[in-house]
Length: 579
Image (tube, rainbow, N blue to C red; front, side, top):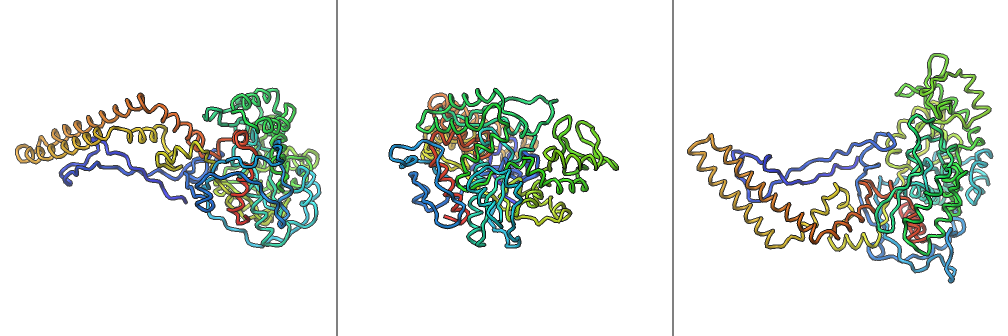
């Protein structure tokens, strides 16, 4: 559990302690308020404040000279060992010198660790992967290695998202690549990184949008379209991008700055996100083009061939009822993807009310296996069943709910893979870093209520004489009213509260004056500072959430090019112990 965060707030006059308790000090009192660490993630899983609203815990990766200074992009040399690297590849046009963007300054990357990295024990033997599963993988060096013989696998996964979704999708994939290299070197057997594209997912509201940083540095949202509340819950593997994808791409094109990389980034997305492509296929194609040449296997787990392999374990899931009263199995019925509940000898779809016998569901598994899919707890069990999975690179919410799947592993007699915390980090652009250095703040300063940081920094700009005068005035009020209270207490104790109220009102008046001075300074001199802070917050903590959970990679690639992916890969490799 992450430790609770404590914040000091000025004690309002109405909450002042009575002088009967102890004499007042001229110093300002503070009230310490604990922020609860418990929250609920956007995926509905119970988690601590380390998921969607997880607090920053920054730790600089690398030596001080290299981390705190500006880094210059450099090519990553091909490794001679490990096998997972593949040829160095770029989606982007190269310069005349033949390098990607040699010498271009890229942002600093700061790690925000989820949990300590612990490698899984060597309890799983390598084995061959079913050719039908291999057929569902995107072609490339990773798939070739997956088909070469007995292997182990490190998996991770995510539902499809627009323009590859938030940054944590890329962080997950790079984590799987780095962990596979580390484990391959340690075990001396081929270990393949696999990204499980969960195209069965039907949560269109999670996959229909993307956030990017526009040319002005503000966070801006692109929404493909909105699904009607009463519409069938169509899996993203059958939800086409449609004609709305063209204006979505145009919005990204028009909203981002002009750079030497912009045309190539947009071409990469346009090749994948086509009107006739499903969101799952588009996502898989874009991710494969970006990271497939680095050894990642992008597995379209919703493909009928892979579904046929998984079907026996999905059917076994029908024999188990979870705490919510439903089985861990979905069926695609008249209302789209629908959860099945056992009712005597039959199974009932939750939304449509359709009823199925066990024999009917077995026929579906044999003839149309893509109609059956696991829920969030059965999915990792299916992964471990169809792939020799030694580890899963998990996010904070997944680390929270994966232990709940333990009974399903035991019931289906599947060896449980280790859940390893993925790498987590934030891209800190130069403009943000300059602002932090100028005002002596760090990333944690942006993790707060909008306006708090702005007010604090503007308050520091108040004239010293005004600050000193206000402090003297408060001290004098405290002192004089204390003396008055002592005199009143001797003459008429019933007037003590009247004196306290007058004293509190006088102190409140000084606070009002200070607030109005700060507001005036904001209007007169602080507008630029307020805008700078707002844009810095949009870059590192947009909407009050960690950057990796909101912003997409594309807007950063437009600014910094492929060297940014190289830098991310290097940092994740350092985290995994495979520099």
